Image (tube, rainbow, N blue to C red):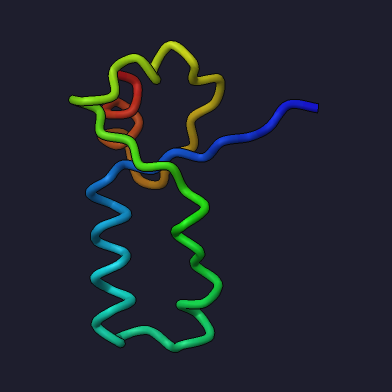
Amino acid sequence: MQNVVCYAEKWLIDKMRKFIASEEIKEEDAAIMNLDELQEFDCKRDVFITSMINFILTLGGDGTILYAAK
């Protein structure tokens, strides 16, 4: 069985950390979002990672899918 590594863009992880810190979210919901398990990915800096991607999950519309595909 292969290990699964989950990457999320750095800006998204930073935004979620600020959201959790703002206390606009319930404490138990914040505990569920374990951002430490995600690997940070910066599409401009980490170009080498794109050759290792097997699967992409996007949440959004057509623009999000096109952004991920490029």
